[in-house]
Length: 186
Image (cartoon, rainbow, N blue to C red; front, side, top):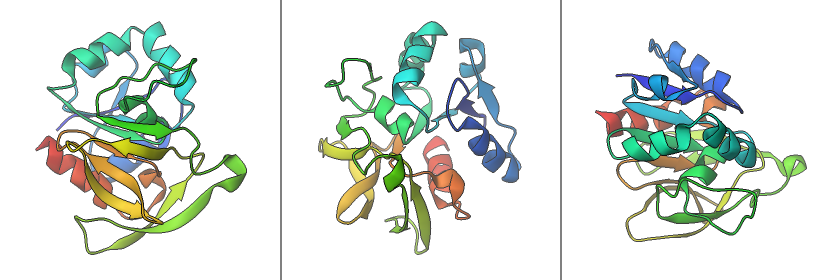
């Protein structure tokens, strides 16, 4: 199983470390040659506008859209924004891979970052999720399944092919979100 981490901007290094701790050899995805080696791709947290522009600058937007049905993608925070079909931001073009909409920084600005216990539908364990300028899901279609909520708001969703989360699983000691992603791939 070849897991890539989009490594253009943002918190990609923490995902690389987490994957290495699971005895995987992650691929640092910086171009389409790296991308086409992947069975799964993690789009990390960061600044979604910058990431969107970097996708275009590196010629990766078209490549991701070309293989989105062949690989599985996990979007974390800014990665969630990019997976969404949100279109109300002038300076951001999302990938529109999953049928949901978000409000960027919907959980608050940087100063409002917080940790919260999360319980998923696929694990008996609770873990602490870290929310940093996290996107808030404002709507999603019937093709989307909610896997976890915080304060009765969805924070982890799937379309049974891709996965998107508002929080940062790379900061948790719990590996259940990664393991769920690996199950999607396998």
